[in-house]
Figure 1 (tube, rainbow, N blue to C red):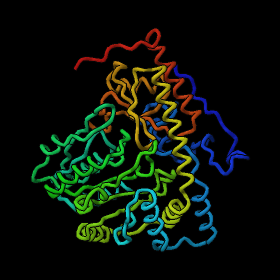
Figure 2 (cartoon, rainbow, N blue to C red; figure 1 turned 120 degrees about the vertical axis):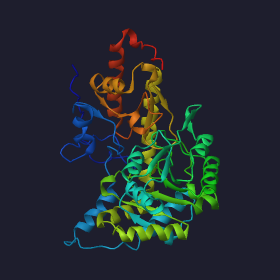
Figure 3 (tube, rainbow, N blue to C red; figure 1 turned 180 degrees about the vertical axis):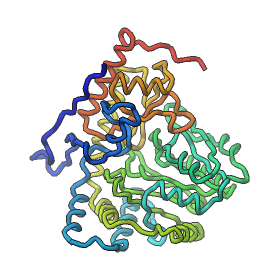
Figure 4 (cartoon, helix red, strand yellow; figure 1 turned 45 degrees about the vertical axis):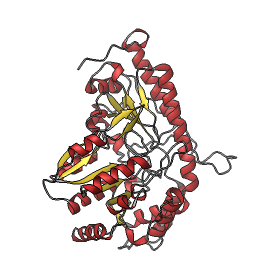
Length: 422
């Protein structure tokens, strides 16, 4: 029988006095009764509500005060009528990208989108026809799979390789998979769930191959502001003129500043022909704008979020290090891929000796943990789970303690059987 998951409440709602303006990430915030997906869908996904939910890729940190205050200020006006994109929105975005990523983005390249996955769907409709092929690189963010299939395109897998503990692109396989029907490749940069911040050489090679075959690259860079350990995010469009000419880059502040419910993102398209086609499609389907609060929150994030982002990443790095060290010391059968970006951990559990469904069942019903099952990310996800480390450290400590107890109960001294053959 699974013990009840205890949620240790913390009454501190503001940064402790004397912290010199430091933000506070140890606060426990109860998200019940807020329609939070990570809470409300546990029963349907795991068969029980009695889990620590470490699956959905949003944070359990308070959305920054400068975003909340900007929304509150707007709420002081009693009319929420039709609103255009604020004049400060695009400068805030381009200044942020230049300062953080060294990319000089021209204002005419940029437009608002109601979400990254929506932006991918719009690109599929813009640059391909029903029955055309779209390449993705699994294991990868699972909505890539859905958005291709749901738009009646042929899904092609160019599976990543694990080399020395990190993912690498398999270019030989990619060139074999390309046909005369291949129109697009969806790139996850940085990679989710593996946390790879792709290097320039890899992106240059990808651009050369795709350009040779007239393939448009849709680069999902929603995790671009979440690089770790002094790594550098390299926007795909910046590695060469070739890359810039074939790319549609999608960015958003929503992961970084924990406001995905506001659904705010942007496209960046340097090529005027690709941009004109994309804008024309958006105009045809009446998707050229967003809502007032998405605009306001995004501008506030990009104008005021530098210090918060830095402190949040330092805390997340500490969380990731805690989990990695705990597993190495206590449960060496579970091997995390060391992320270069994101707050996600890709856990290799093959040495647990279970098939993927049984593995998730063990985590849910024995350890009381709700993680993403690896197979939803496509080929290469077998025997894996994805863990979200963007939460108060006390939650992760509780999660690891429950996992250790469950593993130790599995066999004497936590011994795990040999993985199945085949």
